[in-house]
Image (cartoon, rainbow, N blue to C red; front, top):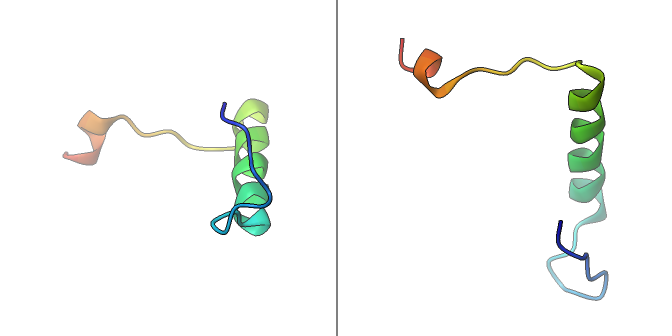
Length: 41
């Protein structure tokens, strides 16, 4: 994982929070994953 530079203009704390929440949901099994092959059915 790369380091987050909070002084960088493109740093968006809301986006980072959303990504971190998504990772936690994935770890808890609270998400649905779809294979690439299933996307084209």
